[in-house]
Amino acid sequence: MRGMMRCYRVFTGPFYRLCVLVLLPLAVLLFPAAVPIMRDYFLFAMFAMTIYTAYEVFMDSWAFGGIARREGQLEYVKSSARGLMVVKKSLLGNLFRQALTPALILLLYGFICRSQIEAAEYSIDIYIGILDLYLIGSFFVTAGTTAVRFMDGVALSMGASTLCVWLVLFTAVGAMNLPWLTLCVAAPLCVAAGFGSVWLIMRRVKESYYDKKD
Amino acid sequence: METSAAIEVSGLRKTYKGFALDIPECRIPKGFATALIGENGAGKTTLLNVLAGIRLDYKGTIRYFDGQETNVEQVKERLGYTGPGSYFLPNWSIAQVEEISGLLFDTFDAERYHRLCAELGIGDGDRKKKVQSLSDGNRMKLTLATVLARETECLLMDEPASPLDPLMRDKLCEMIRTYLEEGDGERSVFFSTHNISDMENVTDYCMIMEHGNIVEEGFVEDLKEKYILVKGETADAAKAKEILYSFAANQYGFEGICLTERLDALAGMDIVTEVPSLFQISVAVMRANTKLTFSQGGVE
Amino acid sequence: MKLLQNSGVPIYQQIAEQFKEDILKGAWKQGEYLPSIRGLAKDLKISVITTMKAYEQLEAEGLVTAVPGKGFYVNAQDSQMLKEQHLRKVEECLTEAIQAAKIAGMTRQELSDTLQALMQMPDES
Image (cartoon, rainbow over all chains, first blue to last red; front, side):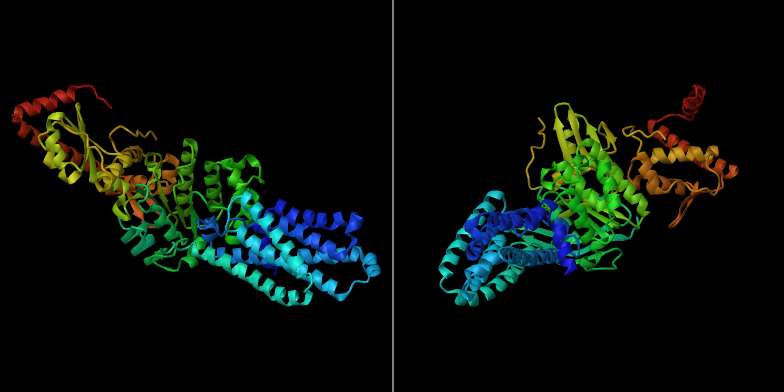
């Protein structure tokens, strides 16, 4: 685990980490707390996951953007015997952080606004719905960041980020009436997407040791 | 000259889209600087990538360090590869490159990296500067700094001189010499270059490649004995053309590279001879083997 | 050391000549090691193979001895042996001159006159 975090830390710049680990999550958490209308936990979750998806996909172009491109940009990394392992560990480290960040945002918000939540007597379905939002957001973040890693340029990652936001919103609205079913589908999908993403990127990096087969 | 080999290649073959790298036998001598010279697309980069282990789809055997090791993963720690272009991720900063190097290589020495960055003037002391905002020259300097900050036994450098200014090329030569000196015969350098003249004073051994084959190789001093530069009068041009290895003429006379063993055939002509530079030898060999056609300086 | 890039005399020969001169002058003592080939290459800003070739020439002339892995040390400069060496060189050059004279169809007298005339010229070096 420590190796994973170290690889992740090294692979990403300090400014990126400051944004992704501190500034942006804090903004997502604190802004709604100041707005009375956002005191609805579910509404907050919707808001938080949308914004989180937007910035996470966009910001990834400053961390891993383009590493799966055919031309590759990893000659230095590949010239080390440990190169592939370092890439894999940092990808896994990032995945771990991506799972943790929104969960922490949602839990912290729940803690901050616990008086309102108790007063409103949320049903269990609402909590499952919030968990669904977490899963839906995470799924599209994984998909979006994976896509960004095949692309080059800020414009493309901006596009990917916008697309992911819409997908999160549509899916979330569509799943609103089926919280339990969504949970059963989204949970395994999320896990699969996470590991699938790392596997896919690593396969591309490994492929760059070889020429394209015609 | 008897030398042991830093890297020994046998039966190397790699085909890709109508291009074939085909090197039946080749030895990179240990303790020396070897230059790899050739046209664009001759296969220099491919060969260097294969040797550095960042390209794995080839047939043949490569033995490293006196034949001790054939698995490139086992020797990557002892090799230092530098390449142009996409060597680092563009959004890495100079400071980040340092951290990554520490993760990637056991012998990476951060102190030495700092010293090299300062010495080479990379990023003007701004350690937050990103790789993408560095000029080509500075990017190459940064790759050199990462590699030289490690304990290696063989440097594999793809076009190290190209993006550098004359002052830095001189510095590069000096760094190569220092590297060799500190290794006291145990360290070797293998680099490709188009800037033959600039690198001649640091080149011990030379390999000339044309469409995937090594067409000439040898110690520079031996090549300078094997080939000789001949200049003569217009009257002898037609006859000399038959004998010379490479030939060019104009209305004032002719000039060309001759195999020294064939110099006798020019007896009786009014000629002067000169030891050719490595550049002149390389161009002659490349011309003789190229697929491109040159106007051969026609004789009227 | 003064090295000329374009003098027509190969660099390694220039280096060898310099060392030879210094050794004969006694600037290098018997048993002393010459600078390492890679060190000298670095200092003179030339390639390793060039200094190596210079040292090999010195070795061939019997001025230094190579010790694998250690370098080249200066041999005892026996004045008798040196004189013989130079005598051999003189013979070699004269033989060459005689051959050239034969080709040119010079007589013995003409050849010896030429030698005399050359010896009367002021010493260039």
